[in-house]
Amino acid sequence: MQQAIQTCHHGRFVTHDYLDVEVAHTRVYLSESALRPESRTPMNITSKVIDRDGQIQAHLERSTRGVWSIHPTDSNDAFTVKFDDPSFRGVLSSQQPWDHTEWNTPSRISILLELLYWESKLSVEDNFKFELFRCSRRIVREFEMLPSSLCLRGLTKEGNHPKWGGGYADIWKGQTASGDPVCLKVLRVFTEVSRKKLFKAFSQEALVWSQLEHPNVLPFLGTNTDLLPESYCLVSPWCSNGNVMEYLSTHPETDKMGIISDIVNGLEYLHSRNPPIVHGDLKGANILVSDLGKCYLADFGLAVMMNASQTLSSSGICGSVRWMAPELFDYTMNPRPSTSTDMYSLGCTVYEIVTGSPPFSDVKPDIAVLMQVMHGARPSRPAEGFSDQLWTAVKRCWVDRNRHTVKTFMDELLTSMQNWVHIINIRYEVVISPRNFFYGFYFFFFFFFFFFFFFFFFGRNNSC
Image (cartoon, rainbow, N blue to C red; front, side, top):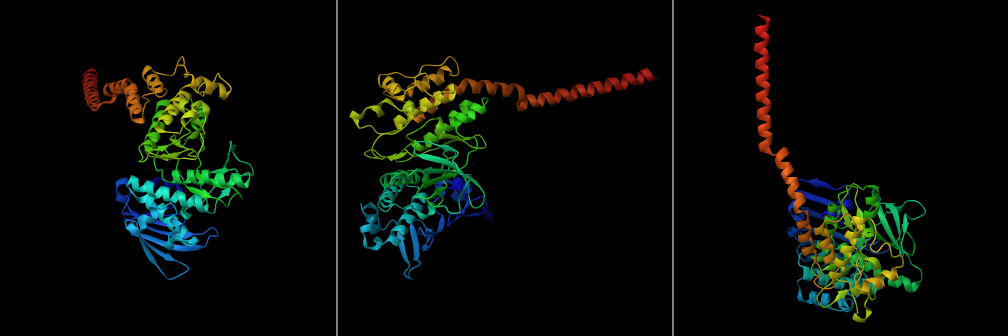
């Protein structure tokens, strides 16, 4: 949360050992120790539940882990919600939580959704977080609404045309009310039928993305439905360097191993969640570069949360053919994205970064690539750019069985860099180690005083 907060609100201030920030209409008070992931639960939260017209429906306050005080504005009947209460756990596990008497009004549903959002953000128990996510998803899809804390107001867009247009979304540059540049990903709506399907995809991306906090994952700032009529908008920081392939074309001297390391670290974070999060569309175009040159995994439109028995994804397989694992093309097996298919895409992305071209760049139609991949074809090793160790690691991402995991790929990547690091360490030892610095300093003063006294006495004898 700290990273997202810093991006959302640059005007935060620190008083003694407490950080006081306001994100949207939510105020968060936390001690500096609470910034550490293992210490996030002591947070105190005060939040407002706001309806679509901007009217306050309730005030929420969390002062103890899992215990919330709710003060509705339409009545004086304040009440308390305890997440460990058996009756409330029954609401969470229900397929239709809105059928419970205490949550069967529109305002109570909005309150419940806000409680689920914040408790999920603050919980450190992965299984519980997943339970809250599933309950939130049921409510979001039933009522076509998102937690009000995700809704950003006061945004403006620059110009009359998007910066970039894709298959189902346009990218606009915008500004927050405080003037910070942001990226506006606007999903296109064509018909009423497509609008319902699009909201399903929009809400899935927003819910998954809002749970992610990592230095190599693009921060999620919120959503907006007011800026462009009949459109859904996802908001993130503006990355002026564009995606990693655009960045490399203008900065060819960039350390590509550093870029690969950023990508692998971000993917390791996703896959280490419980349940794991599958990106689903990993490629150079979906990796953005910050102003400081740090890489962010972005575009979570196909990202899913999964457990051993279920994958939370929409029906059908989508993605980018040249980066997709062959099993995703086999419709006789009911294919679904997985951490393993992400690893195949990682190998293709590393290939793209090293070569500057997408996989199978010499094969033009995507359907031809699909057929070749299903028959066992893989990108061939280029003449230059890959060390033997890195190429071996990438090839293991493309095998059909015993494919690399992120952990094993990271281990092999470190091994491939070991000789290079050893050379750097030797150079450091020879050139700037403390011992050599001391000896250099000693000899400098020895020769300085030797020549000083030599010329002093030699000059006096000559003058005499």
